[in-house]
Amino acid sequence: MAEDMKIRKANIRLTDGSHIKGQVNIKDQDRLSDLLNASADPFVVVFNATIPGGQSGKVVFISKSQILWICPED
Image 1 (cartoon, rainbow, N blue to C red):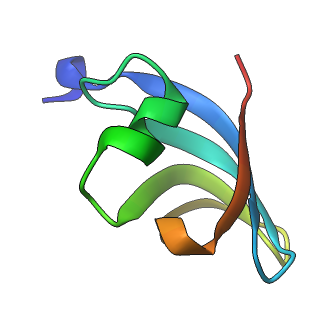
Image 2: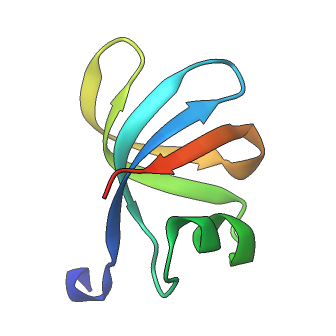
């Protein structure tokens, strides 16, 4: 299963102003933007995430409607 993962590091800014850094599995897409635009899934799963408050190593599910911008860190 893990061998099927295609991991990209990302910085994400949410509409509430919070900032999350972590890793995203872009699955069978070529780019992180393809995951946001082409995938029917309404959520992006971020793992090994650092979230507001300094907590790290978390898994978070982010609604695509709450993403202001996302920047790949490749």
